[in-house]
Length: 298
Image 1 (tube, rainbow, N blue to C red):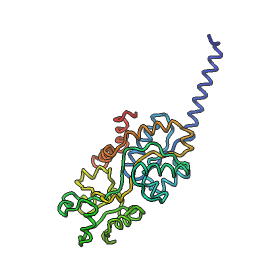
Image 2: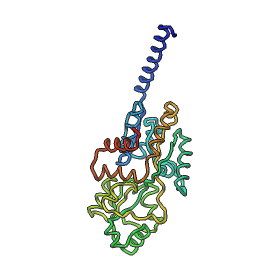
Image 3: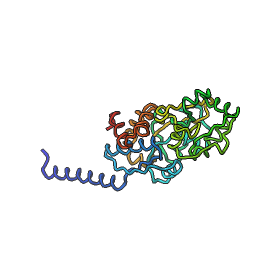
Image 4: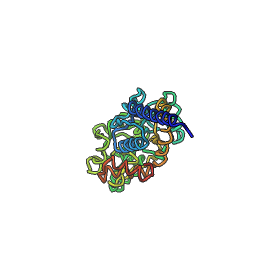
């Protein structure tokens, strides 16, 4: 039998250890970053809720632009966020588009490792760019692929496009797309606006074609036809959690927690989550919580 004083000292030591660990966590929260559109706002909220449920001290910084968020992570102001493989390879590292999803992920992982950023397990998703038309209009004009769109434009069709400012200027955006398919929207026919507004502009007949994201829930809800990228111009944009190496060294259990969440994500899941917010007008925090609960992550 242990001496009562020894038991007391052991208990006290364990208590002090827990207090010290808790105090450290509170002093040094994990900062979860996020981009400024629905899909990312949902994922960021879900990640914050998941980490808190696993007893991490967490701070959220969402609503950021792509380049701003990336720089914040490189500077150590953000510890982790969900990134798209195509962004890393093409936008951040200015590399040619790889042939497939596996190569895109491997390239992003290798290049970012040199910068102290660790790509965890990729999800089964591809939220790539796409162009869409109203389904009835696409049928009427017989435009179902980007090659069909290019042919129509080159035959004199006067079509207008809704695009966000980023896609208009990106190296994998509008200009190279038009070059790949050999057509051009006149500058006056391109209406630049926030990403979320392109859907409403197309639905309401303000434009003929709109930039959309492949996993957006409004595509089906608004009766859009997403035009087939028959020349496979658009890169793969596969989601994965990216964590600063220093953060992962300090919190190694983050790997299994985030990989478990990543394994639940696929295109149909993202479409459903996005639809709940953008079409059904559900609260982002609730949608994120429901997603975690439905997948037994909480």
